Amino acid sequence: MIENGYASVSESDCPNQICVNSKAISSVGETIACLPHHLIIEIVQKENP
View 1: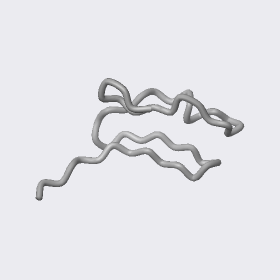
View 2 (view 1 turned 120 degrees about the vertical axis):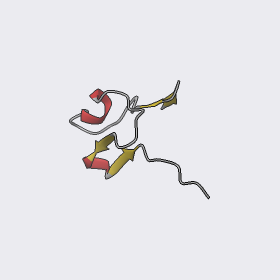
View 3 (view 1 turned 180 degrees about the vertical axis):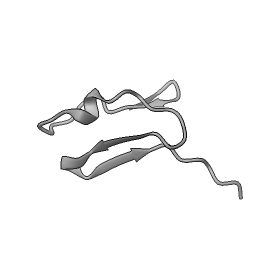
């Protein structure tokens, strides 16, 4: 879920729920990982053209 400039995982069917219990992220370099689903969410800096 992306809301008010923050990204988070609101629900998942993985057994450990680490991604759901991670804090919302908003700064470059922050990540949320769900290893059972091979999912990585990372805040990256937008490149200037």
